[in-house]
View 1 (tube, rainbow, N blue to C red):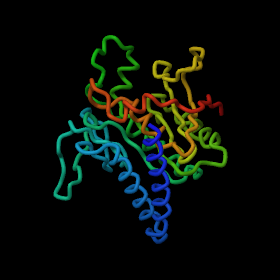
View 2: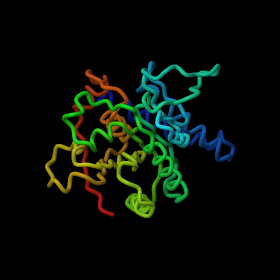
View 3: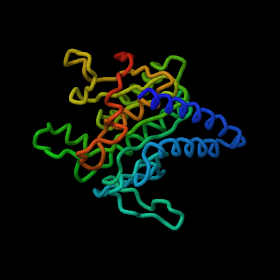
Length: 270
């Protein structure tokens, strides 16, 4: 387990170097820089979600006639997804029922416009609905859990927030309140490089920490202080999210991650 964590820490350092290199390779063009960073993060994720999974960029469609989502940097395509690729090996269509999760890369969330764009992208993904969730015995679960399983988990990865990360989170919560965005359409977690993961527990049913809290404290925003092992925390959080299909056997990484002791967790108040 220690070796796995060290490998992921090395991956984080490599990712950081790749992001810095993007600024040079992009030659000052913001779109080129963003493209290089997206590709670097896609390459990282593809090593932990190898074939027959695919990490792609694109818009997600559902079968209910909703408008497609915004284009998302990293979409995990489950092996059950139809092989709808073109001659360049790119997916022509991404279907919600074959997508496990979506992640957007934002280099700097201290910029208000980047925050707004990320939240709008998240809402567009959350409006997509799978026809059927992955829960094997849905009659045993409350309606809001079933509904959550039919939505696509959405994550943010960023290198930077405001000097006090709570100021960025306050900006996010304020935007949600101003635009009357229900919890179900809000993001699931924010990974801040070399700092930690802000986990959004929307219902107390999804509270997974071992330390006891009053029932009214089991939902909200929680900071997991992973430090330079933040990518470990992100992968762990992804593994706990609802995939598009029911699985009986846990993933290889999941067998190891379940033995991890989540670092210091703080209930965030803004």
